[in-house]
Length: 285
Image (cartoon, rainbow, N blue to C red; front, top):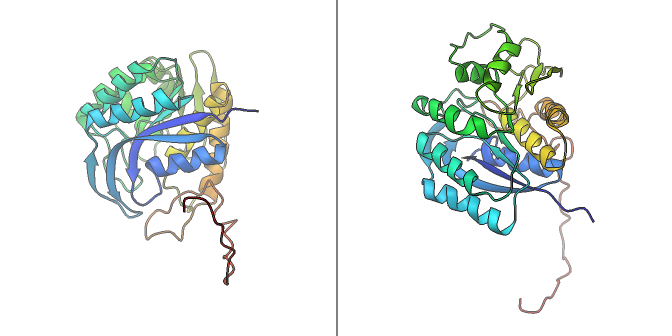
């Protein structure tokens, strides 16, 4: 009997259900792994924007990770929104407490789909110094990649992606995947210190993409937990995230709708038939 793999998301909560912890759990379910969470912040968010962020106290973040690690166990970790320096330091402490070496996928979330800032600019240096060296794979999009190496973003420009990947990998992570969603051609660039591999995929203009980065990094973490090497995991993440964007739920909300990795639009739940239903009697109820 195969053992169900266990993947922990350390990230923020999106009250609109499109990104963050909520997107991560959907991606884990789609990949057939058991998802667990350590919430770093509660965002007041919908498809239009983020109106408030409430950080979770650092000791509670550590306690959440400790609780699942000591009882359930962790086969891989995805790290998303962190927000500020105390949160980053708490996550680093929680990782230090893990007994077994665990693959870590770091999605350096800095800006929401709506444009809201999700990482305190003063915390960027801490993220680079404390968490990048702990990452098995880091998955920035192009603006995040440029921010990590100190370049100003130039919307519309297509910078040297391979160069960005090499510079980020020099900061400590084992593998870098610069995702291609912000490029003219939606090509991800994978670099592990030896190989540069382009991972192509179709572009889906005009579709709902809220949560696409969270979905990509979560699929990658799930595939590492299932035993894939980083390149195969990155290819699976590209394929499933691209499909989720293609099936995006444009009808949800007034802004950027969420991606659909579970195929909700294609397979809507059938209505339950009305009428008397048999009652199941169980002792104690």
